[in-house]
Image (tube, rainbow, N blue to C red; front, side, top):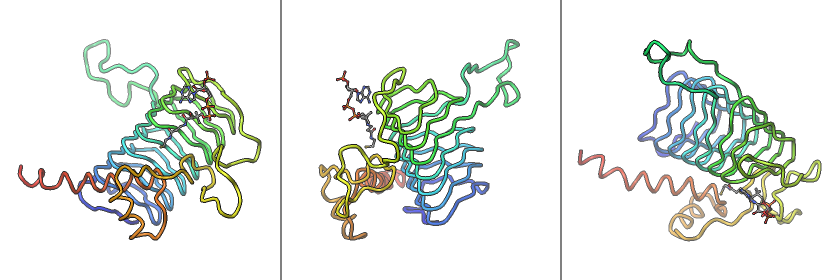
Length: 233
Ligand SMILES: CC(C)(COP(=O)(O)OP(=O)(O)OC[C@H]1O[C@@H](n2cnc3c(N)ncnc32)[C@H](O)[C@@H]1OP(=O)(O)O)[C@@H](O)C(=O)NCCC(=O)NCCS
């Protein structure tokens, strides 16, 4: 496991972490299971009972609740929200705060290679099929078929990717392509509005930053910015 940077993280002792997991600042993980080669961005929370497969990318501010399973090579954009209770209540009829015994956790499955766009909300009890793409800001209320591109509220199928095609639409295939299997951001040029971050990335890794890599590095920079304020308190 690599934790970079090491400060301001809450990784509970009961978290099962795979090999080469990168977790950035202000993440909060407890009781969950994380596979190998996973990247977890800043301000991500992953609750107990959630399972994350190998080679997943989870962008900043995303919330993964109990009952969620991500298979291998799933991409989650920023601020993706999962849900596990369709009819939430704070208290019971007798005025007592609800406890774990008072509600039923409904599971959600995101299958191998699927990508979920930023700020999407996924209602519970659904399955997102292999290599499906969920558009930014969508509210997903039903199962998403494999290879489907869905968007909107409620999310509807826009089109279906050719069967067996795991590329990002519009990205050229062939030896020169830098796309990763199933990765929505893969091969997309990084936003160069903060060139110092990307220079740093190139120096450290010798590779071009992708959208998600740049954002993770941006998270690190934010952390550096926050530290002095924390010391003053
Ligand atoms: C869903 C998505 C993959 C669709 O891409 P596409 O297949 O190329 O679709 P198009 O751009 O041709 O749009 C097709 C239609 O869907 C609509 N649409 C596209 N994305 C949408 C979205 N997120 N929500 C609602 N409608 C959307 C378009 O307006 C268009 O509607 P129209 O035909 O009435 O004009 C893409 O728009 C998207 O949201 N990607 C997620 C990006 C993201 O969150 N990245 C996170 C990491 S940076």
